[in-house]
Length: 72
Image 1 (cartoon, one colour):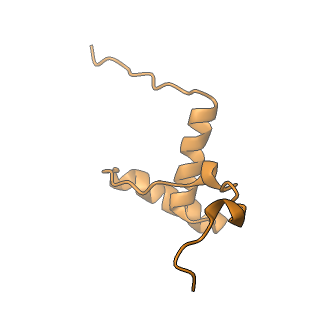
Image 2: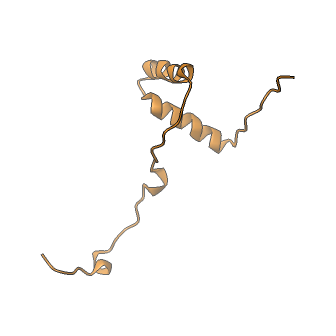
Image 3: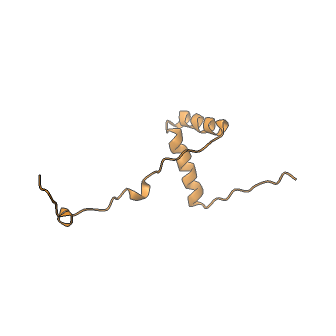
């Protein structure tokens, strides 16, 4: 092995998947919400975490906003 490499000569390429990378997070989700997505997972064969991610992506693309109902 060489002690040093000329990185520029290696012709590095950008990661074409960089925009689709996911970041693991921890969050508290209601049991009924998780069950809803797990049931959907059973119907579709798609992992429930992916379904949740697709739903959140759709919310971002459509710029959906929550509408809170006041308890007055």
